[in-house]
Length: 140
Image (cartoon, rainbow, N blue to C red):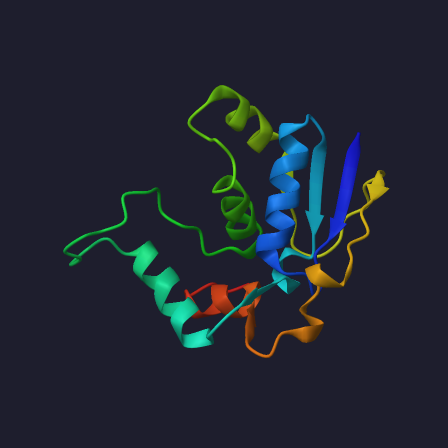
């Protein structure tokens, strides 16, 4: 079964936990409008955090992980990967069942409805994934 998530105005961490759990259960997940998803928090802090993750040069204690992408769809997929047991085979298989897209596509499946806790309506401080990626030198 294919589940379709429209990420417009949704909090990326909450959607990522839902997507990771569903993928572990064997469902295929398609996330559209990945660039319109939001992260809650201080804008300057989040930008600096992801800049530090992307550069391991000149750091005394670098984060030992693969490079973080600067494309919005790949960044959302990488955030979901952080919530999977990727070092085990079931986590790798679940990761293969997740797709993220910039904009919308024509895919048939069940659309997922989220309650208000997944939406940015009550957030005062947030940054969209596109704004974060543009600060990481993404040119879309």
